[in-house]
Amino acid sequence: MMDASHVPDRFDQLRTRKPLFWINDAQRLSTDDPLTDAVAAAEERMLAARELLCELFPQVRQSSNPLRSPLIPITKFPESIGWAPNAGRWLVKADHMLPVAGSIKARGGFHEVIVFAERLARENGILNADNSLISLAGRDARGLFSQYSIVTGSTGNLGLSIGLMSAVLGFKAVVHMSSDAKAWKKERLRSSGVQVIEHSGDYALAVESGRQLAEADPYAHFVDDERSMDLFAGYAAAAIELQSQLCDEGIVVDADHPLCVYIPCGVGGAPGGITYGLKRLFGPNAHCFFAEPVASPCMLVQLLSGDTVTSVYDVGLDNKTEADGLAVAQASMLVAPLMQSRLSGIYTVHDEQLYWLLAKASQTEGIDVEPSAAAAFAGPLALTTSEEGRSFLQGRSLADATHIVWTTGGSLVPEQERQNYLMKGPPRLMPWE
Ligand SMILES: *Cc1c(COP(=O)(O)O)cnc(C)c1O
Image (cartoon, rainbow, N blue to C red):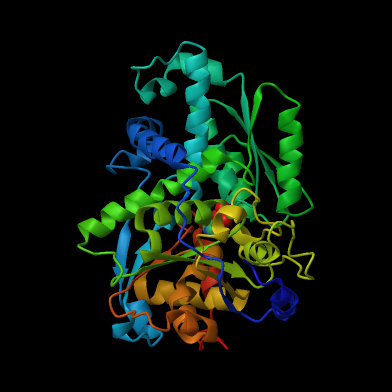
């Protein structure tokens, strides 16, 4: 199905570190849906956890659903970059505002910790079939959980999500961090009682260290960002949330009204889960595009390589980017095969563009995100101005399209850090070509 003769050309192109747009020619209508039950169970569990989360985190008591993020229509940002109004409307799916964890990692991460806590509580007779999850916040559960540790490896945000959720339930929480993790994320975890172990290597090394330590300890659960089904299902549950919000906004999705979704991609779990969920609900009417840094396009490299496990180092890139959430050299091999038939494409951005987009989103919309999340804002323009994007659009009308910019993180960024980010984004034209 894949035409392998173009792969070396593509790798040469990636090595130039110029932003590019890639259309996935292997995309097809999937009839297989191997994870239906897992995703449906996650949707249900996350609804059932509402009361528990409100109990655990006083700051979310006001919100009707602490695991739901707003869907915000925007016009000023698109206008400011010269977006033609007849090329479709923009909305921001504001996961940067998800409470407590401040990023998309709240979805998968909270889900997995709750699954593990629920299982332990059931095995130990603390939770019965008809108990609500609120018992997980009770004294008996706490006593039980204090004997266990939850371990993960992360570039930052997964650590925040898993660490904060584990600690509040009474688990010992241990996060292995890569050298590129931001200092303020480590600080934040330590001040919440989470043990942070720093590694001089990259993200994959941090994950591997955590995995090995946890595997040797029967009282440790390892949250595996590269392989976890519970994380993936938690992310996939976001699709039904978006569907209901679109419905509330009166926005139709069908063959004449396509949905184009732009999501930053690291190891692939979060954007992959969401893509999986959206394709289940909307089939060919949803087009999902991932954004990756020019230095770390790991999902693109993996999709071009088929079954051969290939990292960005293998093609001569260095995986060095300010987008810490996306600084991943090797895509998840759980997720990549699922994307082969479902993903519409991937575009790459360089760090300078990220800061430009970050500053622009702040100035025009008052939306403050972290560099990784800013990558999503480039999507609609990348699709409509790049040569490959335009050929994808041939014969399709965008007039009634809905573009969803998925802002994956940012509300926990400290003010000083935010100011530093803003100063790096000089207002100049997008260096697209
Ligand atoms: C983790 C992360 C992503 C990407 O999620 P993956 O599951 O690693 O692909 C995107 N944006 C931010 C802010 C993140 O923290």
